[in-house]
Amino acid sequence: MTVGAFLRYFPDAPGEAPDCGKMANGPSGADWTAGEDFGSEEEILLRKNCARILHRYLQKVMGVRDVTTGLPSYEDVRDIYDCRICAPHISQVLARGIMETRTRGNLQLFEGNREVLKEEASLYISRMLKKGQKEI
Image (cartoon, rainbow, N blue to C red; front, side):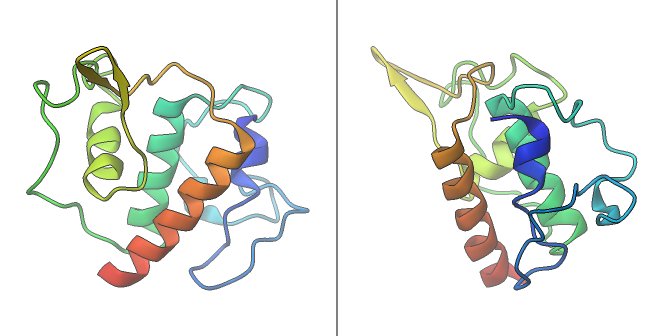
């Protein structure tokens, strides 16, 4: 899945059906992507960028405040700090149960450089909207 395709799944406001025909960061799209560097619309959507986008939507559109307890640590998720820019976003979506870690041997990994599939993207957005609505 590409970043552009993923952004098309987002409604302009919570509870609103997404307009899949427009780009969220285009001239007729929502302004919640303004000032963000989510990558070009043709880029493959990686898990770390997916976490950033989900978290920023929670903050900017849904008005959800960050959780401060129950955040995963390096001991919990061994690769959580592989991307220092993405780490806070990854922590927030993991703490809320929007995205999950993968088990590799006896380690829990986020695998931020792995591609997000269409089915996963839809699931993550659905979880985000449900969890976000509960916190508003």
